[in-house]
Image (cartoon, rainbow, N blue to C red):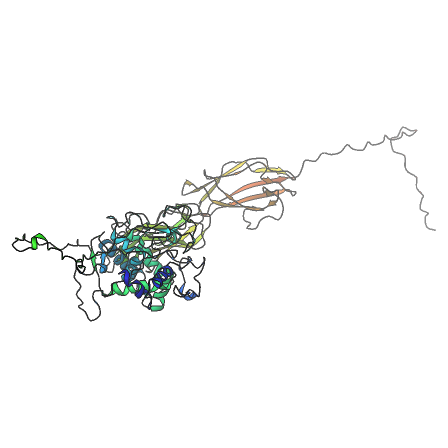
Length: 607
């Protein structure tokens, strides 16, 4: 097959020199944020227009434009147009065989994505084409029973030598390299792209780029991103170019897709045929990539003129009795169970089961939690489906872990109940929304309400009214107990207003006031009962003001609790000053005590 690479990749490439240039060009594509391919690299990749390079993840490509396999399908593939449409189950050209686990992963990814994004029209053959080009179908299906490549598949270090330069983004978690990134796994994801698109398609609790099921699912979602319809040629080309920015890569993948669309069959894991080389020919990065040589056909040596013809084997000489030929059985491919339809694809609707309108009071937990059932088209429950609960609206209510979203998996009865919900201090209504993860089905909405904590009774614990004189503060301590249906009511917001009578609804314009922490005074405050349900007015909390009189603190709570605290403000006590001494009277000669009269001019009588 290697002899055909030059002709198949580029018409007119007839010499070894041109072939070497073609292979080198295949490795020269770069990530867009790095060094773009030159526009004049004739004989190599042509510059790719901006319309070809859209990448859903923001990276230049899934693979970091790392090298890839370049062998194309054989020139005489099975099931050519006009040929027989019946492809043997276990026989046929080796290149048409796809390892069983790898084939199952592609088919499962196609079914899953077609159920969640039917408009993408993802064909499994596209995944097979990319998988062939990127890793030779996971190195010919060398995966364990769980579908994980063994040993792991690592591309060369992306050090900028002929391809993208990408410094480490995962701390070596996926590729074992703490300095540079490498493409990882059967579908050759670079770690930063896997961090965004990684999937757990085999439900083992891990998102592993070396697992063919996880990698195939992630690749399918990546190719379908940006609302692509892969049934359209333009969208299909753009999807492949977003995977690896190379026009030759696009042509190579499309060739394999067409090849697999004409026919294929399953072969046992580990028996797949690998291409004979990579586009880097093992000369860069981390050295040669493990390959399996193509089968060779034994040839009969051609005698050189003048030399003796080789003797036939002893068993073919005249008079020799040939041993009986023992028939050999053709290899048997173990049956592969068709991939099961993912549970999420079976869900037809999400039904509200209980607690459609959960309520609670501020600072309290909701006792009735939202509950839904995932049902199929016949109304039967679907277990194993991920349900996402989300708090929507202006509220400080949170799930038990402190977040606004939580995911719950339906049990055997298809039911999923929201995690614990606790209200904050904000009252009002909001929505708890339940949706099926991976589907666009109609959501199940729960109308949740948070109201104020209630107290139907407020009771004064001390008997005497508070009293003070103008210009001072009330020195007595007083407590008020809040209860609701006989139980202590902690956390209740109580409004306290100073009024002039028990029938007044307006706060007093003068007289006593509340002293705030910053030293300012007000006549209306909101207080909160403690964990014991008590409100406490300490000495100095209430100022008497400068006007004597009788006043009241009216206390009211949500739920109807009301009480009054009597306030008496008196004037300061006053004392009379010493009286002015009266002068003793002057005695008269006769001993009279009558004071001496003050002379004054006499009015002249009128004439």
